Length: 78
Image (cartoon, rainbow, N blue to C red; front, side, top):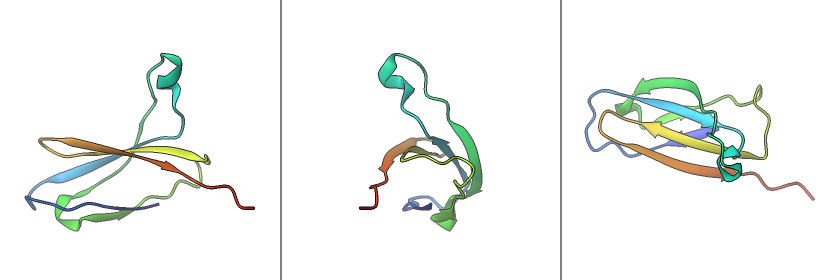
């Protein structure tokens, strides 16, 4: 998975967290796994999710002062 962001402050690092299920919809906590920690100034990271196969991912990018998340839904090949 190719993840990018725009750094407003190039200092520090970001943590990339990934959950492959949406258990929150069932009233449970999502299980995020820390897959990378990279310098925020990179503004990019490639994440290998081959050991976590899914059609759905929640991605959280955690910085020093904030966290942003996105959902990735893969389309089925027809």
